[in-house]
Image (cartoon, rainbow, N blue to C red; front, side, top):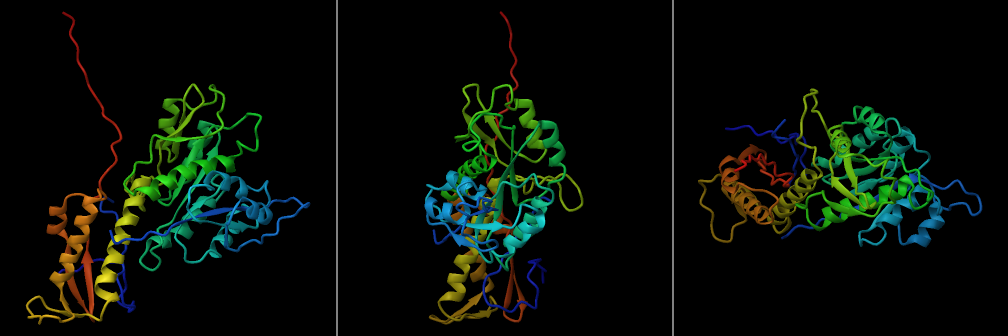
Length: 385
């Protein structure tokens, strides 16, 4: 009998579908993801903010948020970018922007599926702390599928150096030139993070297959002499940063998103978790399989698991390994119709379903994700007659 690695220990005896995601290279689905704004309270004293640190709080509007965190707080400034997208927002205030205080604040959030938006990627240790907090959300125990969005403003040289310290599959960090204009409120880093995050979140929420590239974003323009050149943006992308292009007219576009993930656990260059689109598709596919299989095999009536050779009377609650395999193929076919995955025939041939004993079934799912068209590279020759 084949052995399938699921990452679910034999000691886990809670009924239901449990799915872990691994990198092979190194509808009936509800996704209820929210925005979580992470920042600090205003230091103003008149009036002082009424919110408290390390407490998950629902945002009901700008006025309520201003009262709780202060209108000059980074939480409030980030909210201006995501306020009108129709997605529920929460905030959690940390005691400070230190890595330790960020970790404490995230511990207060609990079991919630969210996009984390914060302005602290440049603070030592914060990206690593957030990675540790969000990684469990991608396991079967949580299945919340969270990732974070932030930005750093600095010179290309300093950003490349910083990029070497970040290697997280669940952190998206935009590289921005330092803003030297005269509009500090509308161009604060927190304000820009909110606007950048809004484009990523709205695009991801509307379609898990959508490319996170060529997305217009309303940022206060820097002087053209400060804007990153094409060569610089390519360098920054290859250093782990999502990149933004500003044209000569001052209009900004998210040129291409990515996570900070660059190497695998043994230090080998790896692109498996580089693209935001990969996270979106994996989260959608995983949610599809777990929700539909749970509804089919655990929500309606108690099922019996029998061998494929066992005759099953009409109306019986018994299922076989072939029944479960067919259900997985059906789900995959739907995902292929939605262009999340491809190669149904290969999936059908390579998936495996085995009985692990004690009423437990192990399933191997080879997910062949679709990819985003990135470039058309042309070599042309010419003659002169």
